[in-house]
Length: 534
Image (tube, rainbow, N blue to C red; front, side, top):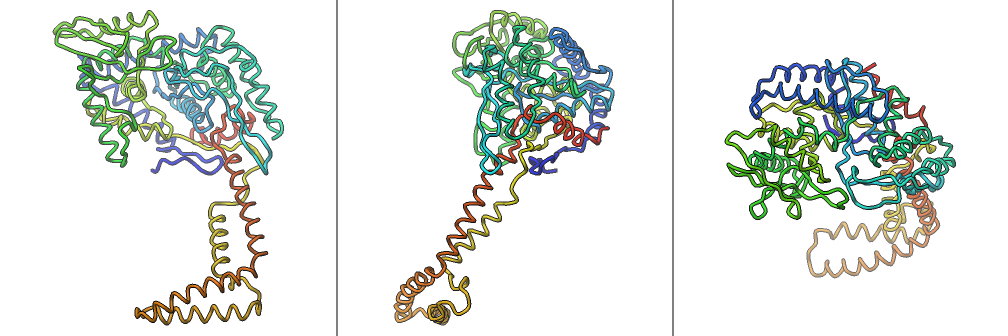
């Protein structure tokens, strides 16, 4: 099935269909429960069970720490996992979270959303509609005055008016459209999180979580910054670092195969290769210190007796290795070296790799993530020697109720442009009967002579063609004087159509945040999108 963004309002993409995805989750759980593939001295089934148990424990602890009532979940059933940056994203992303909750309920399982707070924070504002339906525009409403390019987990809310009065400014902008946004009812949860001393990523997530709980589709939540410091993930990190050369080879082969299959020339798409630098090998992890404005690749050097890690700058650490390295001991060392403010976090690819192999019975992707996971599938098969489990691709489109788009299209514009061109070069087609009859007759004669001499290549014929070309220009100029009014009317129609096409880019913008919608409009859309899982 082609994975394309739904263009129609209220359109949904689900690949495979949701009912089929539910069966996939059950089948994958059964297969992985019995999987005896050896990975670093244990079976995949055993490692996955440990990872699931610890991660769900961490998610429950996180909910209790934030004072949230736990959503219904059943650890004995399938685990449905998704994830996204802690932004106030559009409805096409939100539908994934609701699908996780609906699938978990349908399967008597657990829904887990991973908050990707290790990415560089952006955007730090919402785009809201401005202007009028005839001439709509967008303007940006910031929710923080801090614009430093840092990972989400290091950003703090400033509790200034930019943050606390954020929903008021958004509501004022939407009032002209007659929209009562959901944001005003969920933002108090963001302010409460800020007042409790939580980071900006947690504040934005608190608003979204409040909305999901309010609408009966809560999921367990866990930031990547927390997942990355738990023992199962640290063991995965330790294994990847100890086998960093083999991992890099599998990683780069997977990316090369993706680029060939998708005709991609860029060497950094969908991710950059892991390369050697003066004896140091890049790994699939980022590292930085709290307060840094950029991340660096974690570099490794592995010998039979030691492993060294560095960021290529200030950070450098070395640990001895036994003949049979102990993953648990290295995992503890990795945790300990992060106690003083160092962050070691996974890349996007290694995050998904861990989630799909060691956590999820079904991973729910958006369109972009599912495309990139063609590379993850190859890496999974190459590095772990397993068949990649299927995943669900889900997205949707919902337009803000801004009065609906104008009934015009790019095809309409092409027709007007074509008509205008014909009016310039074939003005006789647009004259009333008998109008400029002598000019029309003269042009008809010129066309007849042109057609008659088409195959004549003599010098005399070439000379006639040159003279005829000049006469064509003169006749066309004279004829065009008779269509000035019609052309002006057509130009006016073209300008009107262009204004309406420009307006439609705002009126049908699917990127508007879910929190700008009226609650009933959003709820109806999500219920329709997931009706297959009633």
